[in-house]
Image (cartoon, rainbow, N blue to C red; front, side):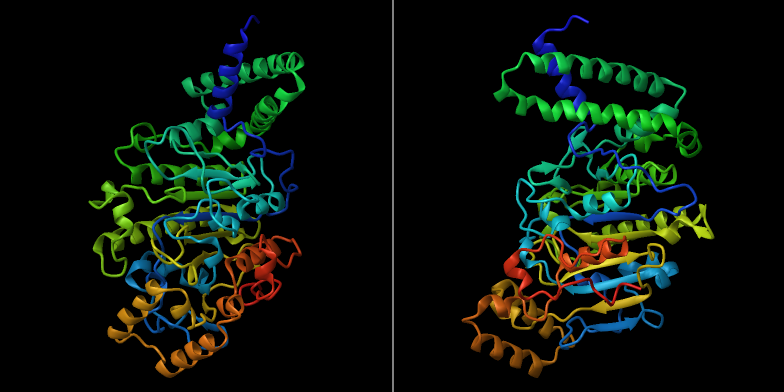
Length: 490
């Protein structure tokens, strides 16, 4: 085929973008053997923060002033109004409070840092936990990454990474995402487009080899990632062909949420339904759904929310009705995932019996957060490896309320005036001790803490990897107990 260098490079770039053809997105790992129930993990990230009081049983005080982990059953506790859609699943729910992620610097979002457990930034410093887990839970698509935004084009980055300087592309358009996977099972224009694209990738792979031969050595670094991505895309499409019967079984009837979404929240719903279909078809075992893609934008007009973008993060989550609406919508999406996976038999139970859903915020506890109280919701037991029906609060060093700065101090004052249950004597003793030891600032800063990295270590342990740390810097390891969070593992 006659093709100019300019046209070749243009086609190469467009092909890579249109199919997520970037190195590290695909690998050669095989799915679990037949007859073995695969584990699955879904990450759901909401931007602008997750106030711990949105996930605090009504009978539990906001602050934990104990020197030990608070670990109680949810059975006789009352979930707050924000979590009401999860009431039918309370025995499968675990609420985690008090994990430290201050080293991520999560205020205003934490690109790559939220799932990486390292300082956020425009470029990732290492692989993120979803990618690390995908190596233990392999699928045709290792991580199905979806950006829950509307209007950003087809692809975005910001939440996940395959390694240092290697962002993982995320679909932003639910129709494009769906067609890239289920187009092979369609009998209409989507299948025709799938075949056309396949021919294009074959052509690009052939032309890229010829083009690379005439390039000087110094130029190879520029083209090699694209070539690698194209070859990975071809391999993925061949593997999708091999499961076309399963794809046809779980293919969706596309509605306006896919083809003509009126607002961002309709795109959210479409992405969730697509992710569930991909999980059922065995395309992937790890899904990341990121609202805002670790940034401070977003609009929720479909829910009647008028405040948008960065301004929404500056509203008070606890007393703001718009936040109540959004949080409840999130919980309804989680409940939808639970019901959908529970409806599919697998082994001696259902797909949900081998699945874990992790809900949190890329901004930790607030839009302007310190990251020292990073809450998580867990749904499911991941093949009976995760304890459920628990409220677990790890100790929060009260000295941080002074050493962290005015934002934390003012929060304490506000809650104290509101007569929240705070042990004044314990708080003051902690502050005095911290001030006496202020010369050893790092020791005080991370005293009595378990980090979000320890939680990610726990997920890896639950999936079979015997590690003590995940992406935790050496100077933080000195104050972090090695190993997983034993209160969570079965």
